[in-house]
Length: 481
Image (tube, rainbow, N blue to C red; front, top):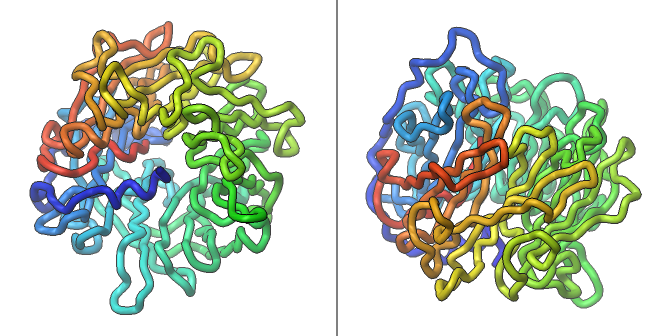
């Protein structure tokens, strides 16, 4: 049930994606960029990237694409959108089967021009006939939106094995420039490209870190955020640690500093995580999702999955005991049942504008009525005492006001994202369901009010809504912005 194994379940049948399809030119962008994180076109509203990583592009199954929906004063507007693939003019590369373009996404202003850029880890890309694989494509933000892109060219690691397996951005050395971290399934396992990164694809320098040698934990997923509250970005490395008779999930916090990332304390393991200040004390808290059942190899799982909150402090991790939350926690809707996959996906944002970070949790395998693995999403609230079940809300396709009907294998909650697209200080909820309509996939946009996320006025959209292809795509499998 590891998230990255889901692509192997797909069959090679999807409609053809028209090369270079562009449905929106961001002509409403302001003359000067907003500098707002997540704003690709600089108009002052955050935007959203949505991957369809196994969509057919031209004739190539599993080539993948990314759709972009732009934010407006009324929130995300699906009429202002574009589709980006390796068949799009200005994007390097050629669509190839099982490249999975869009399967790994992050954002950040890598060239320091005030516009947010989109980073695509194309980990399935084969590099000529060398046997190396993986490239990182940066799609540059600008007043007209995301139009041109560059593959990182130098420096690059000596060994490439699915470079871009996981990607994250942040100011890891505190110099004011945005850096890029990328997982590589060969030595070194973690590569850090120092910003700013040129539009030619050249970075200032490359630092390679062998996380397994340093900590005993391999690099499978990386998550960036400021845990220590010093303005320098820290990096959570999630992977496996060897134990007697096998392996168990474990994470380690690498702290940012003027000299770069240094290994720190070990943290609860899992398969997804976010770093956000849920108790508003000025320090980022690590929220880890483990959708697996609790066992020797999954010590941070729980009945039906669980999330663990490890609180931050100026030194890294607080001495406060980590808190585990699942669907048996007081106030959390539903009941913890084996196989629900509570914690499959996570996102952070402030859903009601009270200054506390809230957490959206995907429950992608939850049974709704008689519909097996239909899925749901739960929003947990931040508070002065930390993340809590009090005031939590759950949403599924059977929730009144949410379009659609919960059906078996929809996997609603496969991806979640909280984004303040309207610029009103409250983050709206976007939920992906990659299994909708036999794997075509879809996404739901739920508005935010003073009371938090509401189903009232929610909308759904899919690939064809945005001018993309019909058929197998896993649209909504990855969300970024």
